[in-house]
Image (tube, rainbow, N blue to C red):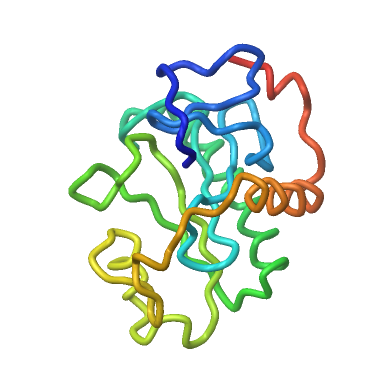
Length: 175
């Protein structure tokens, strides 16, 4: 999630992707396939909290095609392996908040990939309240959760991209 807004289609030459009403620069992405891409998070709830999302701007999970669902989860699995390794995670929370009543804050299907460690939340399921904004992070007030800079996000994307390997330029330009 970044601050600039764009129309519902990807901008020219795929230098940005749509994430709901937000433009995601290629520098903040670290995986691109023909149907999905992965991006770093503006305000992660844990270090390594990233998102995998369809390229098509689709608000609800049931509106995805079978091919988009398959690719979303294939890419989610690829990303989860890298995130688990890089962040020395003992487990992962993988979730989709489908619609505003489920806590979805950006109207575009996305899979959260969140590395987990023993004791990161006092009650293991508190993570869902934090995702939905009902509770602050343990020991961190929501006002203290400042958006990261574009430079911070780009630097994280470089590390993740290096682990995943470079993408096919044809996939970046596919629409």
